Length: 196
Length: 99
Image (cartoon, rainbow over all chains, first blue to last red; front, side):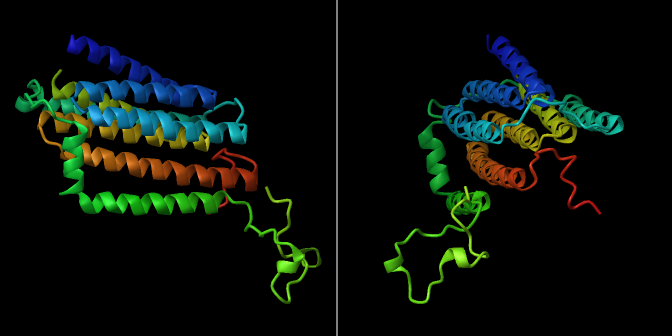
C-alpha cells in the first residue's frame, strides 16, 4: 500500500515537474508546480513529517505560489515559445539537466547498500509533530531561527523598496509644508504624482 | 519504501529543475525551476530525517522553506522592476551585463 502510494505520488510529481519546465504557458507551469508541491506534501505526511506537510501546503503551495501567479498576472506574460532560440543552447540545457538527474539517481542506485535499502525504522508516535520540531527549533536551532526572522524582514523591506517605482511624496496641504519648500511643479527633478 | 526511492525521486526532480533553469527564457519560470530544485532538496532532507529517526532534517527543511520564501519575494520584486524598466521578462533580451 505504501509503495503503491509512493509510486503514484512520484509519478504525479515527475509528470507535473515536466509540465513546469516544458509548458508554453507560464500560468500552466505555475499550476503544475502547485501539483508538485502538493504531491511532495503527501510524501512528507508519509514520512511522518506532518507539521512540515502542512507548512509545505500553507507556505509553498499557498503563499509562494500565489505570489508567482500574482506576478504572472500583473506582468501579463503571454504564451510564447518558451525555449531558447538557439538550438545548441537548448540541446546543452537538456543534456546538462538529464546528466545531473541521472548522475544523482545513478549514485544512489550504485552506492545503495545496506541501510539505504532497509525499511524505515520505527519512531514514536509524536515524531514530526509540531511539538517535536518546535522544541528543537527553540533550543538547539534558536540562532538560525532568529536569523530567519531577520532575513524575512530584510527580504520584505527589499521587495517593497525594489518594486516601488519612485520615492513617495507625502501629500501634505500647503500650510503644513516646511518653511522654504518649493512647489513640485517648478522642480522637474522632484518626483511627480503620476508614479504608479 | 526504502530510502533509495525517495532519493531517486529527489534527484530526478532536481535534474528537472536544472534543465528548466537552463532551458527556459521566461525569468519567472526560471525562478519556478529554482523552487523545484529547493523542493527536491527538501524531500531528501525529510527522507533522511525519517530514516535516521532524527528531527534535525525537518528543522533544516523549515529554515530552507523560509529562505525560499524570502528568495522568491526578492526575486519576483526584481522581475517586476526589470519588466517595468525594460518591458520584457525574456532572459535572452536582458543582455545589459553581457561583455
